[in-house]
Length: 65
Image (cartoon, rainbow, N blue to C red):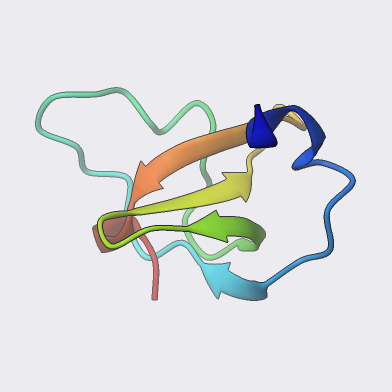
């Protein structure tokens, strides 16, 4: 249950959202284009960032620079 303390975990790096054009999911309500987000964890396909709701969410890496 590593995900339960991600908010308190130190930031790995910072990324900038480059688009919110998703074919399958609605991400424009939790990500803003041009805004920087703190990365709390990373996998090969996903970045787990603190989004606009103040919670950690997992998003495809294609949304970020």
